[in-house]
Amino acid sequence: MLAKVFGSAVFGVEATTITVEVNIDKGIGYHLVGLPDNAIKESSYRIAAALKNNGYNMPGKKITINMAPADLRKEGSAYDLTLAIGILVASAQIKADEIDKYVIMGELSLDGGLQPIRGALSIAIKAKEEGFKGFFLPKQNVKEAAIVSGLDVYGVENLQEVIDFFEDKGILEPTTIDTRAEFYKTLDFTEFDFSDVKGN
Image (cartoon, rainbow, N blue to C red; front, side):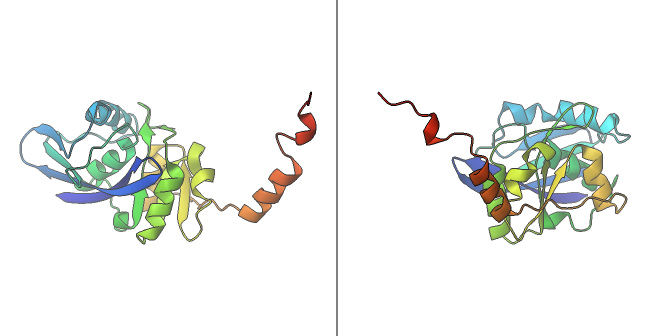
């Protein structure tokens, strides 16, 4: 079975949407293509542990994962969650009919918890530009991404929360940021003040 999940690559301040295609077929093996770096190649060990510790499994079949566009270098561990969800959908362990409407990013711990990622704001901006409905990312980064209006931004603590969302088992609300209120709060409580500057 073939599944498509979307992530994002960040270069400087620009983000590029990455299509992660996961195909599971007869045979045995784990093949990851599309110019992944070593951190992404090592993701299979983190994903396998995270799935097992949450009651799922890494299919004992031939797993082929393509990260497109194939000629663009992908770096970092932030694709762990993207790959894990793709594997679960492709192996029919979970059902996620609207998976193609979301960008999913996050580094997995072995227990299924999520570690923060870089470039959350750039990814959110690109996701909105390309018409995605929402963006799943680690809770530590949610305020940065939620600045972008018109995009449902979900801060999640672990793999299971994402699974529950797509299977309609959990209550996960998007984070909203009142940018005007945040701006004025910063004005009232500035970290630095010119009165603190000592002159000669």
